[in-house]
Image 1 (tube, rainbow, N blue to C red):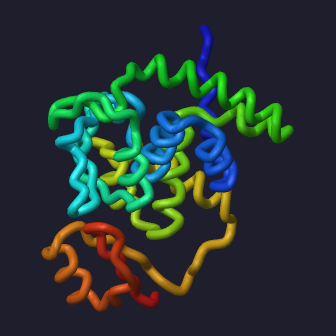
Image 2 (image 1 turned 180 degrees about the vertical axis):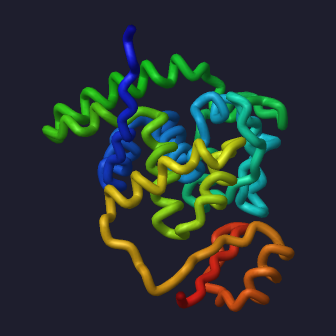
Length: 216
């Protein structure tokens, strides 16, 4: 009987991801930047409508797939500008932002990825897929916060067991961890109050997320 072998997913460097973003066209570069910043699935990305983009609060509302949770995620001014610079289809709030099927996007991406891997003599680029950017996001979020429940919320997992892989990935990639502080992420005012009462200090904000730390 065939037994599948579980392997940790490939995690590229941020420089390799940015190389692909810079080397692809307007549509694909925006797709890759969106996946990099949010960690959403490609199936969730193609469902995005202009109604899901809130440029004032700088967030995207994610309609889930694969039994995930819905979520609202912060995005950068850079990504908002890239989205607004996409080809100007007749826009209504209910028109999808990317106006393309996920298989079409995958085909275009694979072609450009092969060209860039050859141009820059970097075969590692061939290992980067749309799913790879989701794994990269989960790993980087855990490395920044050491808060597995925060990573679970960002990725929309139903069970934290699906998120635990990023603890192993982060440990394998970075080897060294900061043992001096415990980091937490607050998603609303109630969580912020609880962290402050527990002795955590505010570090910074990113969108609607507030980051706190406490010395161990």
